[in-house]
Image (cartoon, rainbow, N blue to C red):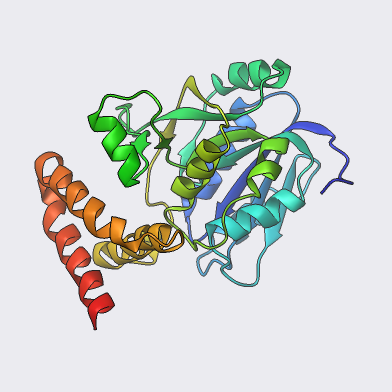
Amino acid sequence: MENLKLETDFSIIIVNFNSGELLKNCLDSIFHHIHGSYQVIVYDNASSDDSFLHVQNIYPDSLSLTLINGDQNLGFSKANNKAVEQSCGRFLHFLNPDVIVNSELNKDYQRISRTSNQGIWVTSLVDQEGRLLKNKHLIPRLKNFINRLANRNDLAYWNTGASVLMNRSIFDQLGGWSEDTFMYAEDMELFYQAYLRNIKVHYLDTRVIHIGKGSSKHKWNERERAQVIERSFLQFFTRRGAAWEYYIIRPILLLYILVNEPHRFGLQLSVFFQHCFKRTK
């Protein structure tokens, strides 16, 4: 990567897997609204639908668009890292295929490209009705929870990875996206690594539409998806030799779900007990 000639300001990286019309809509929004120096790279994780083929027919490879047809599903993190290897931007913008951007992003691109600051930038996310989505979450380490209860300021947060920008040098410093996580929790891992390295996270005013579950809803039902998320969540702790923290923190989060999202509680509790039972067998 060090020999790569950087020829553009922004590389927009999109990982696709069975996203249907969402991928085309995402690209349409980029090419319609975004101006200036940028390229788009789409890495397809061996989709079984026609989402990638459809885009190939509409948008053939060009100077501003690179389409990479993967022969297997590498997962979100590894596919992103593979796409970055083919990129040439000074800044990287990781974007989900179920995101719709708007022209306000141009102002952020201009400001970021002119700044000397190093760090990560996160756009706000809204749903299709324009309602602001929760996009800042406390990183689930026990020390972090205790600091929150003590009203300390040095808290660690993670943000949904649907629209995340960073300097290429920061990406290299982080070692890219952690490939230990196939999908889900990779954004939590990324921001935790940034926190450990004192990398600044900046929040942008621009709001982009995030439809959500753009790929997983075509592959899993709600229970299967919850199981994958739970497994990735547990791996976050076991990777650090702190599986015991999972059994303390997860019940706390379940209580939060019970109070704030009671319709999700039954499924989440069931999946949690299922993982507890597996580890005690």
